[in-house]
Amino acid sequence: MFLLMVVIFILGYVAIAMEHPLKVDKAASALILGSLIWVTYILGGMDILGLGFSPAWKDYLLANPNAGTDAHSYIDFIVHSEIIHHLGEISEILFFLLGAMTIVEIVDSHQGFKIITDRINTTNKVKLLWIISVITFFLSAVLDNLTTTIVMVALLRKLVDDKGTRWFFASMIILAANAGGAWSPIGDVTTIMLWIGGQVTTVNIIAKVFIPSLITLVIPLVVLSFTQKGHVARPKVSTEKEHVTDPTTAFERNFIFSMGIGALLFVPVFKTITHLPPYMGMLLGLGVLWVITEIMHRNKNKEEKSRVTVVSILRKVDVPTVLFFLGILSAVAGLQSAGHLSILADYLNQNLGNIFTINLVIGLLSAVVDNVPLVAGAMGMYEIAPAGSMGYAANFMVDGNFWELLAYCAGTGGSILIIGSAAGVAAMGMEKIDFIWYLKKISLLALLGYLAGIGAYYVQAMMLGHV
Image (cartoon, rainbow, N blue to C red; front, side, top):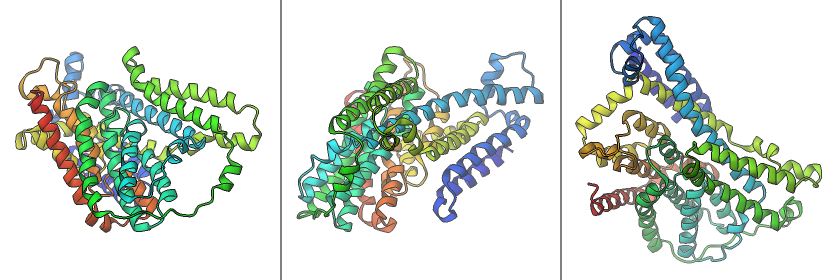
């Protein structure tokens, strides 16, 4: 049963990766995967836990010395201890994402992002490339990289007419979105997971990962600055119809944009002041924004209200993505509880034994497989070391080198292949970017930036005396 859990996870992961050929949404595969992992776990609980690989079971026996080793004790441990424990951690991430995605949809439905798009006037390729990339880099730090990619690729269609040129711009949006999300506690799902899990704190993740993330974007930008020449042709798109049917005023767009961004930025402040989980701050911001929009649109007709009220906006929220995270995180939690991840951690320590090499490999793997289970796996493999730890263990303290570098590598490594990140998949779908084209034109640039960023983090750690 212990090995069967691994086989189920691999098969489930293949089904997720083969989403398009199979024509089965990855959320469905992930939910089945997460459920089957725990079904296998509890059916073979006596054999699996009897192997002695589960740190959680050992801790449970220490905390409950009267617990036996019969079937009832194993079931009680899995059902009433482990599932409840992991469900609590997973729910924090899911509610955070649900609140964030809803706030972004509220801003988007009010055309709030036009504040940014309407101010870009240049047609110079290089200048526009830098502007788009820098905006994406910082916007992704506030929003999530998937939403930022969708917004910025949609913007490209108003700025660039030529498909080939637009592919280069869209590719740089992928790199910039992933890089921007890595250094912000609310910019990327994997960084959110580390932040909520307590592995990193707001100020330190920004201070330590910002420069490596910036370098991983600047290196490809500099190279493309020498290859992209001339000016872009603007497409002739009429916005008259959109203007006539727009249910919001300029004041409402600006106000909701400011409130939405403010609500997202408020979350780290909320956590610092109250010490409550970040999802509570996110839901508080959503609730306030919900009340404001209800009051703002109370006198509008039914048709206009149907497009801008939160009730209607909630129907647009990407629920399958939330369910995908539920499934995949549940599966990883099962492997963590049973002891698979502790075995993997020991293997990496014995054969690599260097946090920079381990994270470099994790980042490269994230170009092939989803970075969410990779980070979830790493969080399960390694415990947070106590404050004041010395030597190798110091890397695993809160804000230790391992966790900060993990946020960078898992966040930016996915840019190496277009299918390696949610941002890449979204851009690929929207612009029909060819996988082989991206591999030939962008992958090497992304790899150079990725390695340069790791080098920058290493130098930075040496200068701070953390190596």
